[in-house]
Image (cartoon, rainbow over the protein chains, first blue to last red):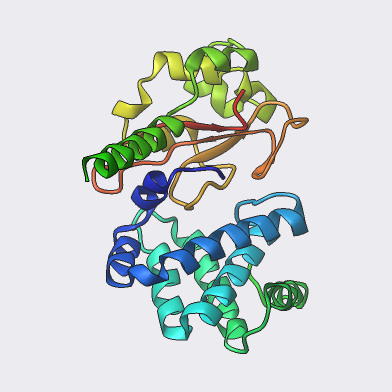
Length: 133
Length: 125
């Protein structure tokens, strides 16, 4: 996942870019949460997949960390912005928004990355997270 | 002041160069089988790997819109950054990456124009 800062910024959706411009002091937490979610998902599942259990977990854990670090409303705004491109396939968008919402709730209680990861894994095992395949 | 501007410019250039698409000649190691849309659709992941060189040699993907890439290569089979970025696992499943078993072939695009910005292969062949 070694991409340049330039690449990371131009990959953002317009809504994400707007959020970053309005809240530049959140950039570090957003970047850190993305990298932590990617790494933890690889650790737990061996890959970062698409529409599968690893995808569901990654969205939950990422949203939980953002809620803890930015607060619920900001995390909700940014995670929604992430899904805002009109080319995002509707079924996949619905899955991601659902799993984000579980993570947003989990993150309200705070905790370490290990604790948030554990709660998202429990949510996955309890059937609270959605997968397409 | 001037020194700072030069350093900033150098970092920017290094960032841009550092993320440029893999050299097409390096991709030959995946195979040199002819790419056709029909062959790709019916091919296994391993067989698709062998067509990537031909695909990139015969199609200037940077002049293609994301919808054209999806029409050519079908639905994504892998994930890269955003669900709307076309992404495919190709080649031998013995290749391990953060994205699954095989090489990740992905096409991030300009969100305003829909044009493919570049192709990405992870890990680099």
